[in-house]
Image 1 (cartoon, rainbow, N blue to C red):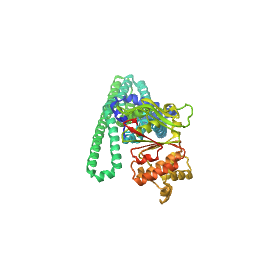
Image 2: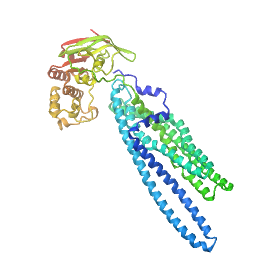
Image 3: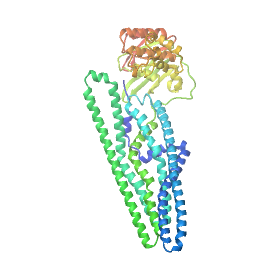
Image 4: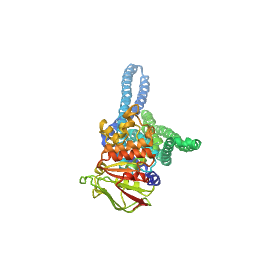
Length: 581
């Protein structure tokens, strides 16, 4: 089987887009849920302010208690009055602290609920977008592509985006808004305190995360790629388990898996070291700015710019207000992998298909097919050269030739899996590029060399040809494919599970299920790609007999390298290196 160049490779070769650009594109997907995001920001900002002012109010209350006690001790005539005022203040303070504590919990819960609602809603939207894109890309862009990496993108990469949507977007806005409120609050105590707070918030919430984020960006992408490669290797190993045992390659595969696991582990250790370094630097910065505010307040107190209460409140406010920017700083610990996952997902969503689907054209009905001076190449490898053939309606046309001569390619071009570089592939006298893609698929049934069966019942595997088919229709198609009698011998009949990739069935049984699908689809044009290539003479005879008896008035294009398969054909063409004879 020929394959096109892997798009994964081309993606790796391309220069990485910046983290800001990735975040901007991911944030663009939030637009449908913007009201919920705004609610999350409001709740989160209010919650953090409750937490911050909880400590500020407690400190302020403590200072007032101390001051009132000192005033009450000046004279005995003020003691009773001072005690009464003090009790009222303590009572009011306790109520305010309890309210703020409860509101902090409620607001935080509301913020998290909104964020996770957005995250899981968007993950579902992104999955739908990715699957829709993959459907458009296949098969031209996906044939030969690393399936393990694709599985990694569809599963773990998209799942990692939950971190971005639930724990990145709103925390950034919340940190900015909360920091602005605190700068204004500290500015009322002293402009110098506001400037110091601004420097602290920018250092902890922006400078440190950006620095460590830039250092770990490459490692994040490397980790996601290594993870995808390991998935591919494990998937290949599981599929080739029989061959691995037969040729005693178990030890070699084990060592190769260990090497890949070790490489993945080394990248993970590098990311962990960066995370530990960032946490240390962040905590050090918070400590330094907290002490800087303390010393500044002491200096301002000595200069007479602030009173004792202002000195204490300013210091407490600075020390207790790093929560939002600390949460922002910790984002970059996982943000490197998240942005790498985002880039891999966005790369798929932005990838253009090689074959664009056609819609809006006039309807078509089938009355013959053909190729008119067709030229086609896979990358630099030329397959068909000035190739022409006519396939009359109602006839069985056989194409015989050696493997690699272009027979299978011809069928794929009729299905419009690829577009020709020259000439025309025609259905009913029209270029297939001018026929609605849905109409084209409706007119054609395609049986490939190796029938792919899904881990499901036989009935559901046949029903792929017509998803709303009744059990009677499925059984009728199976009878035409000469597989009904075999199915009825199974313990559960049509409800028997075929196993992964149909490994509980023989090659002939799988091929006949594939033919049953084609009969159930009931298209007027039947394309058969080497339907008997891997079968013995007995199974070949059974399949050819079922095709002859079940084809009815269908037009059949049968390609095979076996001469015996051509006995079914009304007319046979020989194909030699992309030319017909």
